[in-house]
Image (cartoon, rainbow, N blue to C red; front, side, top):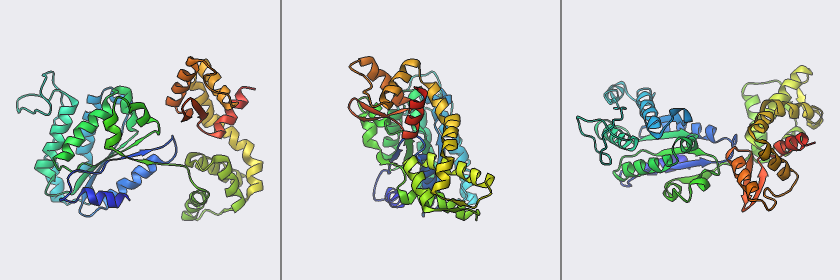
Length: 359
């Protein structure tokens, strides 16, 4: 799918580019898939440049993010392994002007004797300059991969709308800058009313949990690749899949603990019986390394909501404040919204932990 979409984006007869949002809950594998797509773009023919960046609240503002992005583009373009020395030398001549000035300018103006006023202006003018003077005849595309893009909403609620405005205008001028981002599954819902154009700009690719077969492959293949001397029986895979529901993080965490336990027990075979005997230790490790920190994120009132939902009760119980608290817990990643007014804890393993805390 990605190769085909990238090929369509880089055909000169078709203006614009393909923009993709990988959406799903925490730990589901969005970042891994993003890296896989970045690797695929690096192998694309004709050559395409690849730029990767993790969005962070440390930039402070959208303008700070723009500076960080342009700096990363400059760095990554000069480190592309497939580009010729001559082309890399040419790209080094692009030195983005990452200074923002106090003068108020019209959108995308770039006078030679003045600094650009806003991050939107800066991003558009510098990427236009890069494409028109250094890239257009040499690269099929410059693919931008931004992980955790929802962090931008913390520093600027209009950040994604600003990105959409810039890249839509760039792509409308046949500058091929495909934009691929990762976001939690509730991000577009949070911005739908104020930023409807954002939801239309990206094609959404939901990332879900492993199937039983996926789980088996995720367990067996890494061990086989390093010739690790342990046999994982189907009965063990069945229990791991049932307990984790195929969530990639919990599958990997569980297998790490089981492999360590097998080594301590001097056994080279992990079956269902072994998993059952070790599960209390695995659950304790979940609590120590993950669930306790998540529980501590919640206020006392939010914990009451978590306990109520874990017990099968509604979040609000007729109280509007309960719904407000539930929405806050969704933003913290501790609840997921099922349908209007209905929520559940993000994973049954966390639900077990919450019920234990309430005893």
